[in-house]
Length: 283
Length: 331
Image 1 (cartoon, each protein chain N blue to C red):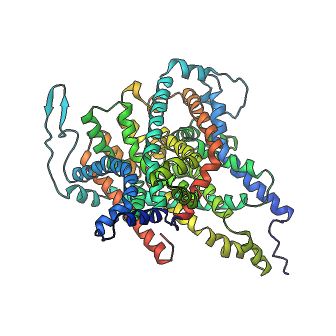
Image 2: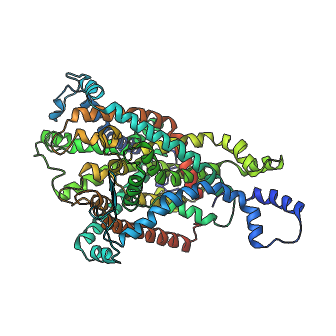
Image 3: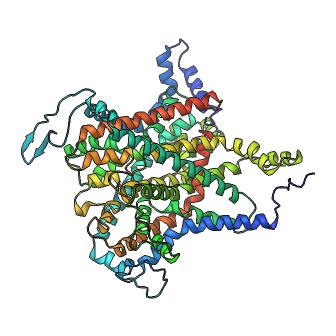
């Protein structure tokens, strides 16, 4: 045996130190912006104007109080929640059956449906936005939440269908077969047997869909120009405009937005991962 | 391809077919009777895609062949209906775009941006995944902390970084000053601004790659490594001969997805640099967006940009698929 081949799972102390050092650096880079954001938001009113590396000298919740009481942040938050929530419900609802059909049945057109789902993910904002804008203007849906939700369907539906497909792929086919032997129709099998089994998958798809709509900026900027109709992504741009900026307001609201999203995300991330990779390895 | 080896519908279907009648009802009829539920299940999405994507797409392509701007577009003001006066101009918009130097500048920068971002995402993601795949103390803690940037909504991340980059009170310049260097106007210079936006996108995108790679690594059977060890392979040889081929399937998918996402990555550039200085950091997508919605809105020009972008991506995806197929991947 040559000295280079060290058995796997064993390594010298130097390698261990190197490994931990590498990971620590990566963690520092991934955490720093978030930590700095939280620290800045806790500073008193105008202290964001200095880059001094001071920690909790004089922390205050002043920024949070201002965001919640003297800006339209609560209204924007409500708009965002409504938009993202509706997008999520509709998207998952429409996409579930397609995901199942693509995952289980080999029918003429199967391949083209999969490719269509993938190709629609390539659509740049620029090509659909003008026709959609004109459509919305014609229907009087500009500055209306349902209008924005309809626009988000173009992003959410193909994506959800793709995600649902990978989840249904992980449900063994034998279960379907058993259900069919017991006399259920294909729809019955889907509705009463497979869908309940895929519940964690649906939850994760729903969450991911929610996050996509929550973070979208392009459509929202154009469709929601009226001040009290804005969503968070649009509204926040106001805090740091060309001529006037208040990073205290900005950081406080960013923390308020990121914390709930991050908490839920960390809860579901394990499922998210299995779903994505299952889809990837089998695609 | 998906599992579905058993083809449950076939079983149920043949039973039903037999009970009905034997004289063969023709191909279309047969296809219809054996696949109607699959098509019925696809129907809702097909309708949505047709109405919400197909129609706007067709209209976008049509607009790109006209000279429509905000000024000559039909609209309704109060009770007055102003009819559209734009005209069909054929391929003029495309010619104009393809012959302008600006377009090729943007293509060059967009390709640079995509290659740099996806390359760094993949490289760093794979590196971290390999590290996390070892026996290690605090492994799950590291993992959660490294995934964190993914949990931050993209627009929030864009704002955070814009604050960090700020030349007067940004913390990055703060560090530089502490180190005795003079501050840099990160977003004021084309070169540093480009580096800055790539860094932001890498920060946001690495967790996804890392997680996908980690999933791939864990699906490689440990026996392969054991066998290689018995044969005396060094760790580099094991990485090259087992790990990389084992990750192939996952890699091909995530690299394609990553390329598409990065190519169309809108919020980062739109919010971090606003395309500036000038329009230096504007990629194709953000440029087309700005074309459509600032100044006199140039609807037709923007639609033409959109069609060109889409065409580039479709060519890329088809080429990618061809290459994979010719190498024996089941795409």
